[in-house]
Image 1 (cartoon, one colour):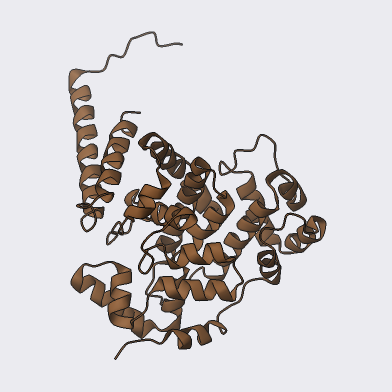
Image 2 (image 1 turned 90 degrees about the vertical axis):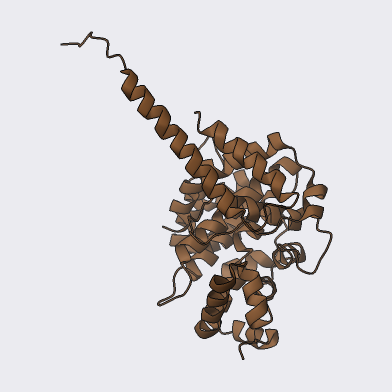
Length: 280
Length: 62
């Protein structure tokens, strides 16, 4: 019997590596641009590896800045605190879950897909005048529950992978069939533990729109970005499948073919550089 | 010493190049079809698939 109980998985989440304290502090006030930026910049700067990544991203084609950004304080001034929060959080999570010994999951492929989804979500949000930083973070972490499940029990996840191979189904269908839960539920739980805001929790939990029928806004963006990232074949995973695309999400976003062509182009243009910075 | 000779491309080289392009286009389309094998029959996934086919065709010309 392989079924898992969500509350037991959640209890184990407490034992997982936590994020750096500065990240948890940034998450507490994610929409607050009035925070003491000098103090936050100083805290971020103390983590040299993290700061270096954030500055490389700030200076990359990701933002297309005309002038070079040399310090975290400059990054906050030029890009805004919300953008720097997103970059710091994204970089920190990838660092914490870089690779596990003897893991069933190809972490490189996992993060390549997640980064592709993040870039695509950001590009979609720009077209739709939605918050690009929330879209970037939601896209980056939409499958984080999968990492938790793999870490929680190798034996259980081996059964999920075997089921998927046998039935040629989606991974979330295999998770539901074998474990009686899936990565979207677990993803929401861990991000709730990390104090992410409700909007991002919703997007992560419903990006396969399993329970919710009508999806809008950020959730619809992440659903569409996830599908596009799979379709652009960014993770080069031979077993990959484009997941179901929500009809209500597509209708509610109402995005034109021309706009989508720009999104495809922008995602592919930024992809390799973003990967080289975030998962080097 | 500068080489002023024109180096025209031979018809054989052009043909090979076009064949390679066509083979690459077909490979990309096959891969895209494979990725959409479960969801591509239904709307709006079919529409997204069509957009991506056009995108891949237009980007292969540049």
